[in-house]
Image 1 (cartoon, rainbow, N blue to C red):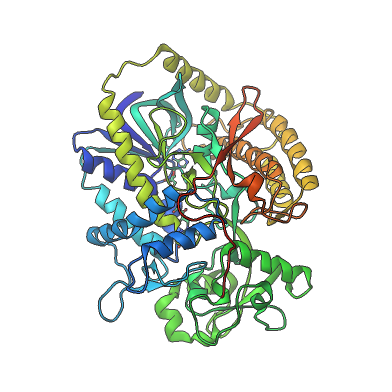
Image 2 (image 1 turned 180 degrees about the vertical axis):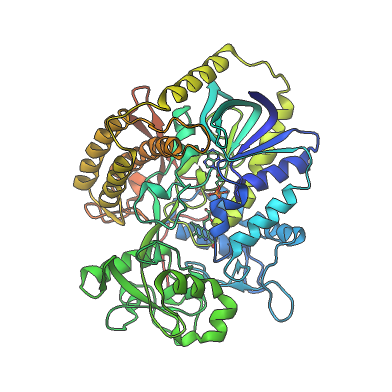
Amino acid sequence: MTAAHDVLLIGGGAAGLRAAIAISESDADLDVAVISKVYPMRSHTVSAEGGAAGAIAEDDSIEEHIYDTISGSDWLGDQDAIETFVNDAPRQLLQLEHWGCPWSRQPSGKIAVRPFGGMKKKRTWYAADKTGFHLLHTLFQTSLKYGALTRYDEWFVTKLLVDEGRAYGVVAIELSTGKIHTITAKSLVLATGGCGKVFPFTTNANINTGDGMALAYRAGAPLKDMEFVQYHPTGLPFTGILITEAARAEGGWLINKDGYRFLQDYDLGKPTPEPQLRSMELGPRDRVSQAIVGEIQKGRAIETPYGQVVHLDLRHLGEKKIEERIPFVRELCLKYERIDPVTELIPVRPVVHYMMGGVHTDLDGLTGIEGLYAAGETACVSINGANRLGSNSLPECLVFGARAGRSAAQFATAHPDTTLPAAISAQAADETRRLTELIGRDGSEQVSQIREQMQHTMEGAAGIYRNADDLGKGMEVLAELQERMAKTGVADAGGPFNTELTAALELANLLDIAQTMLHSAMERTESRGAHQRTDFPARDDDRFLTHQLVYREPDGSSRLEQLPVTITRWPPGERVYGR
Ligand SMILES: Cc1cc2nc3c(=O)[nH]c(=O)nc-3n(C[C@H](O)[C@H](O)[C@H](O)COP(=O)(O)OP(=O)(O)OC[C@H]3O[C@@H](n4cnc5c(N)ncnc54)[C@H](O)[C@@H]3O)c2cc1C
């Protein structure tokens, strides 16, 4: 089957659905479609817990949110993008309120805001600790109002159709039947989320395999800042399930095996009896994760069967507060660790959480390919630079999802011609042939084994601390894994829900992304934010106040280019916390 639409959104999470609504709002006559490899409400956005930042408190200001984000990014975020983001975030969050999002409130009835890591004012809006669930529901139910919206739920995109630098559509598998289809559109928005599954231990859903980044990269668009991978300090040790930063925002402490609040030893402030803004537990994620590694190295962590951990202590908060503000934290601990945080300590360790890098875009979501836009975690505008502040991602999806949607709508309106170049039909036919040949082919290599080796290689080479030796060895292993990948097959010849096929396609995407991460990390011979090189421990603004763009070469290798960071009003400075 071949279908045609005006605009095609790839991804049904926060960014994709916000873009869809923006398009329908800007021109109700446009024929819009959303394609998603899972039912939209299962997108990873649903699992966001802690909240979404937007400066509305009386003692807060746009300027301060901008500054915290710039400093949090270790000056690698583009300041024009950050200004655009911070100015629009409160409007977007209020718009969600009008669409029905049940934001938590103060007793006065005003929106409640909580403190979050690296933010010096309370500005994180929340819906208890199920913010993503409510936010995504709100967007989903709002999107249903628009009759012109076609949905392709449980369809998996395998290729972007691009000719002469312009995007025309995709090839996708309808998972329930296994049929392969071509869908064309005048413009497209990639909103495919993150890629935590490059690593073995992550808070990310199994579907977060960076498909959009790999699709764009192969189609010729550059990726940006791929060396910056965020570790969240508090994951449950076995599953990697996230214990939200809201637990510390509500007053939780991080302690080592001696019951000592160790963050005071890492230049993140002094202990305060009450939860405080600027308290050391609310340091930025890069610094807090690095401090936990410090405790492990000093022998002050706790051994468990699933690695060394520190403890998150919520006991002093009391049952009432835990139930009211962070009930999901208690639920997760009870279900997955069989411990009750009201009376027991929670074991936690740093866990891969978020990808700062992604498909390079301008402020309107335009990628390096005409007609192709990107937004959300798959994109890199960049507002997050070397380290994202918690609760900036959900509003980023809203602000830049809406902008990308509007730009894609304008592009579609300005390019009404639906004639497709011959090369596009040929590409679609090639892709259909490739997929058909893959299905039922016996392979000498196992997808699961290659995936496991890739994940462990990445943890060893590009974890919280990196060095040239490990990165170099990691790159060699990845090259071998790429060769082995070519020898995998998909023994299951069945059509409906062929999970062996999707696992193979996802792994191919992960491998390409992993390669861009290691190459970028190798070339950035400095330490900044989440990228810490033990062999180059200092930040080097003279050489590296730049983004790195990664391009794919025809032989499959990657090539890097530097792109200066946009500095408007805030010259690079020291990152100061807890003072
Ligand atoms: C556990 C957890 C908690 C978090 N908590 C917070 C928080 O409190 N505050 C905050 O600001 N941020 C938080 N984040 C980060 C934030 O939730 C995400 O960055 C954001 O939701 C990403 O949204 P998205 O729309 O870009 O992608 P997603 O929500 O991941 O959606 C991706 C979409 O793309 C589709 N897709 C992917 N590949 C394909 C393909 N090949 N074919 C078809 N469709 C495809 C998927 O089906 C899905 O619909 C959290 C993240 C995690 C993992």
